[in-house]
Amino acid sequence: MSDARSGGAPTALRMVLGRRLQDLREKAGLSYEQVAHSLDVTHATVRRMEKAEVGLKIPYVEKLLGMYGISADEISDFLALARQANRPGWWHRYRDVLPDWFSVYVSLEGEASSIRAYEPHYVPGLLQTEDYARAVLRAGLPHAPDADIERTVGLRMERQSLLTRPDPPLLWAVMDEAVVRRPIGGPDVMRAQIGRMIECAAMPNVLLQIVPFSAGPHPAMYGPFHVLRFHIRELPDIVCAENLVGAAYFDQINDVSTFLEALDRMCAQAAPPDSTEAILDGMRPAN
Image 1 (cartoon, one colour):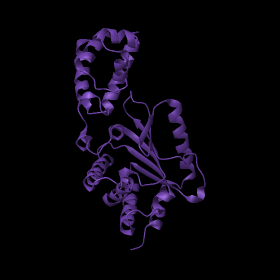
Image 2 (cartoon, one colour):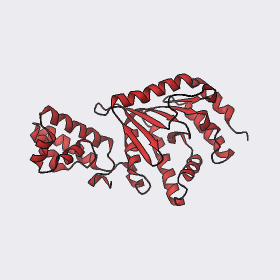
Image 3 (cartoon, helix red, strand yellow):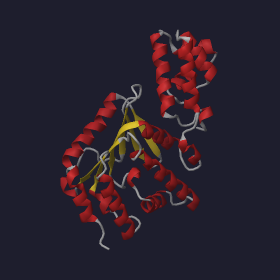
């Protein structure tokens, strides 16, 4: 993928507009093939527009809306949103170090009303200190130039502003005990990182839970994932499950329900949120 003008990683708004185009087409009783014939494009192009896999070409969108019987005023409003959706997000300036799969996540994260996360290895990125983030990124990207690592740290720190913005999302993170036990960056880095988590746990929109080793196995022992929920009606709950080379995104109800059930079970096995501060403080390295 390349930049937003030719496709690129979609913004959340582009995903919303794609879903609206799909709804309008279905309400008009038109197939992909019928719409594609009117635009003189392949049916795959129409499908990719609705799935936000390509940019919203304004002439195509305008013609589609006319076919779907939309009023002139509504077309004008929709086209304004389409132009906005095609503009790169704030994270675009980090495109030199930001893969497309993660651009999608950053866009969705910024629109989320709640973010539920399971993390078996590292402190979630929204809670990391600079030094901790630097150590984690260096371990995960051993061949990256120092300049790229610093750029990625900068991106991670800028993402964290969403926790303190007006009307911030709820962040509810469940972490294995190994996250806090694993020494990353040395005692000073871990001491500061645990202090940062204790500060965040006191925020009204942040819930942190630790799953102790003594809790035994749980249903999500496969890898980290995030479940994002949105105020925007057209966006369903979306799961992002990370792996070594990227991430998979799930928005089908059955798939999302499986992840949510695993999270609910883990939350029941984990220590309650009101004990998190004491647990973290007990694991903080001594000065």
